[in-house]
Image (tube, rainbow, N blue to C red; front, side):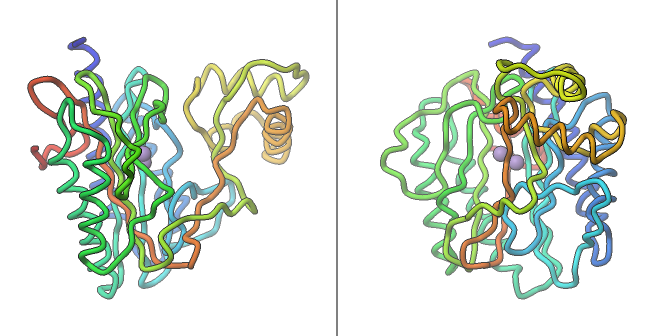
Length: 304
Ligand code: MN
Ligand code: MN
């Protein structure tokens, strides 16, 4: 094991934990989601790290991939279920963590079911354990509380500058998930639960998160300029238009992003909404697995 690597994962996790605490404080009815995202990302940068992806602030039946855009006027509504999903990286080593803030007591039991599913799932994580053991526990816990896990969202391995490292950790009893946690691996465990149908669909009407996918293809002019900045600023990590406003007029930036998507140089992450418009809760922690134990990098209050 590379000691420096663990150190960087731990530092990223520590900052992400601090950012979560800030989110709990500032998510209130009437607060603009743009302000919430900016404050969280500012905190991350002030600690000498960088966001690993745009802060996701997904409300009620929106499950994931909602990040404020330039000029966004959405505010946290009364009685909302607000998922805040935060990414921090230190030298490419990522902490990926999420909490659900419930502003209506009626949805507390949903959040509690998902939180409890995550805690039980984390106890299953150790070098050599199968991914499906985690999925089994998550499904059992969420169903026992009368809700459904969201089956087409999953946990994942983390790589350096890679938010999805190629391995998937299911949120339901998936017999095919025979992969195992390995020593020296970092993973995000992230159950989602709902009172809806139990799966999400894409809302492609407004796509807010992008990532570099390929450096092939010929681009010129402003697109080339934007692409250069994306490569040097974000590498292969997801980003959003808010992080490119210094490049000029926002409509020109948006045009360049659309062009780069059309050329398949960028990939996009559509907003994901619950198929039955059910309420969605999510909790997520990042773990680093060693042969002697598991570090929950994003939460010093938890031990496995
Ligand atoms: Mn996340
Ligand atoms: Mn994740």
